[in-house]
Length: 355
Image (cartoon, rainbow, N blue to C red; front, side, top):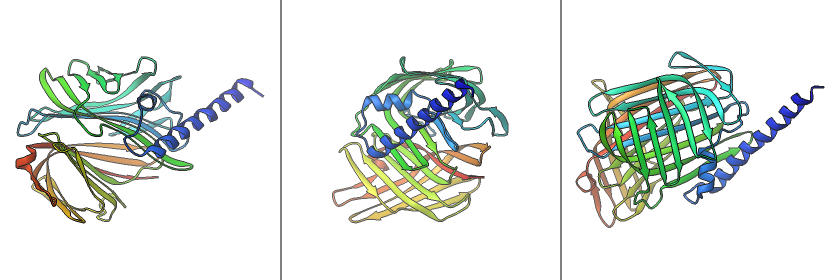
């Protein structure tokens, strides 16, 4: 018997137990009561992935310059269990290269106010430094560096992106979520901050959404969207669906955060209608809950698609959107775009197959 092989198997089992331990801890929180230590543990660690294991970092930034079509940035660093996959038709080698180091994919885009600039799809080596609180990778020959701990982070992508993130005036700026039904589970953290610096050599001032996800699950289908408004308020929507073109939506929810008065409004079962006309896509979301109701129309102005194949398939269609209308009626007041200011956001159409 090869003792080294036995030791490696034992260590692998221990590491996978550690992954499930993190999922269990995130599932026990499911809210904003997450400390800095756990945020750092999730953000700056590469988890051991059992079969169906996946892990990714997803960052999105919205500019507050409030042009007609504001600047957006999206960056994805992704890995999964396996030896290779196809990402947008490109063969990606998947390798674990030692502790906190792997080969995976880095992809992203920038909407510069006039057009979408694709940052490319790169089979990159990513290294995570837990002690230094840093992640280093690359995309299309641009070095990626995320560093810092809550609430002060910085992100650099070569010479095209240089942003500093700071704590904003938000009631809840961190979240931990998780669902664990062994052997399946998924857990993630969300961090919402202000961001400022430069993008493509021009001044940037807006918001940052940093997310780290680890899961042991098949691919799935859903819609997700988030819009931020000029006065700091925000609107988000989520639902599951049964397939690519399905209009049967499950587990629907919508949230509106009133930044001025530091209040949340939740709608448990909103309606979603997707309209397509003249090459543009719009989402009509509306809902009523007890003594309040809302309706918004989100219209796309740019789109980027990511296709993953290998161990199942998954497509993410990312739409950059602006709210053409928004109204929320409560017993106390009525919110419209005149109150909130201009808005900018992302709406996501995700669909997949487990095989």
